[in-house]
Length: 366
Ligand code: AMP
Image 1 (cartoon, protein in one colour):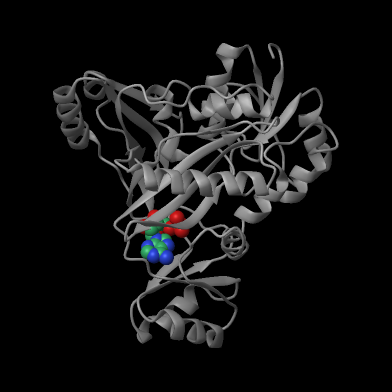
Image 2 (spheres, helix red, strand yellow):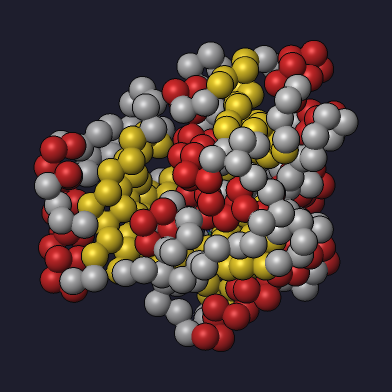
């Protein structure tokens, strides 16, 4: 394993954290990103180029032992082309499913995984027809390139249709029934190239304007946890998947409805760095290298706070017992994730006090 070079498509914070997890294992890292200032470039070699530049991709792939990706909008053709040079994990078929909300929800449905009601929308007539099924409210979303709540509009009444169409129409869309969920949860699971399977406890996630703001291991009964594990196992096996994958769910009336999946390490698993025996990042690397998955059990009480758009008083954060600060070396911009803090402690009072202090210190700009 030592001396192997991992090639990562995408040079954002997820790539950066993969590298930081891999250095203790003696691994080397190379990134490919169109941006010359990609933040992973500070922790590994950065190759810049466009994803449709076959020569640039070949230069990047030359000498790497295995290729993976850290964001789900890597063009599938680029991932397939790279398979001529080195093994590419997760399989590009997983990208294909995750890049299009319609294909993704059809995939979940085919596997018997419940989702919110959904219907493809390519015209105002389609939209009206779909609304006849959902009623109001409903959520109109672009099928591709939506993230952090972007590319979607909640329709609350007939008068919302025309402006929503004005804003989103012209690209393939999907209408979803509005789920009056109790909470949002996610599962992170891993499958290795030898078929070994591992999963983390369900995470409970809080979003602010569609952007993940906080995540922590969920209080969840065994039935809910095993429902999520069974769904994750189905997805991983159907795709002959290798690596870590996250699935986000709405919990409604005690049941899970799959919202979307990410064929990569996931923001709701950043607390595994300090909060689990083996982090999601290390387990992704182990999986793509064909090594045994590491123990995924929790270490202590843990909560993740994302730092979005603006940094808090860092010295005050560092003074909080049990707080672990992660900065991504990215310029602050409203709505941009630029770091996170994980609070981890075995002491109940310290945990409660730390949560209060961090909530007061964090000054997110959305
Ligand atoms: P997404 O980009 O699909 O992850 O959606 C971002 C956020 O919008 C989610 O975290 C939910 O809070 C909300 N949302 C998305 N789809 C629905 C839905 N069908 N019903 C209710 N809320 C939704």
